[in-house]
Length: 65
Image (tube, rainbow, N blue to C red; front, side, top):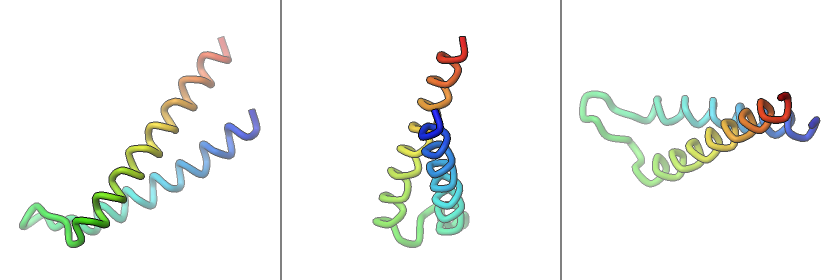
């Protein structure tokens, strides 16, 4: 259980950092990213970290019942 909390914390920090980086790199005037390749990698990592956070949350809720 303790390891699950640590991984949730780590992936939460990763999601916050990548979300802010993606937001900063996006140009709202042209609706494009400054560095498309990096934005693609950041986006995939962001989605995976959110996915892991959701799975951990669902497993914690299932284990509590």
